[in-house]
Image (cartoon, rainbow, N blue to C red; front, top):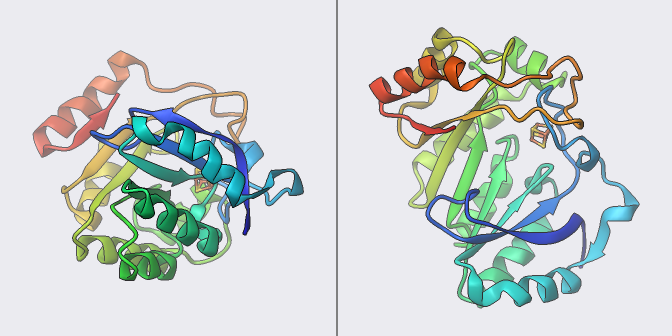
Length: 232
Ligand code: SF4
């Protein structure tokens, strides 16, 4: 089987909490988030089409160093068969399997959950639960909140580890009342705040700076009060 995958898997100690994992980057995405720094990975470009056998060989080189394999992107759920296949390979090699997603394909997650292939899922919560706001940030014309709501409900009712993550971005997600609205929507459990990473590949070139350590303090205080997780 072939899949659109960028580069070789990389080792990570930060992408999956309390786990050392190999991260596989699927290309292609159905959103165009203004703060996305994976611009070159958002298309299904022929140059990224690789045989999964090659990926398994690369993963096998790290097998004895890691706890699991995490597929990120792009949006991994747009290639459900390849995601399923890598999940099966991972479990056959006694490793944990996880993925990161924008939450727009709950049916794919459900299939993976039904097959007992998922051990961990991280979902990006881009903004408050409002279609206009989501459309503004993700630059999509389609209604996506019903799917994201389904994903949230699915993970909350599952027995696997999951996280909901919001990226703080100056001029987009930069106010405590926005976070209050998100908390009302998804609850406090497993909710993570992270800082924006400005790079040359960020989709909206007007987004050039992240919050400074001092500016992050208000969010740190808020997170402490609400018992949220911060990664900054
Ligand atoms: S941030 Fe994630 S969901 Fe948004 S465009 Fe980038 S890869 Fe897609």
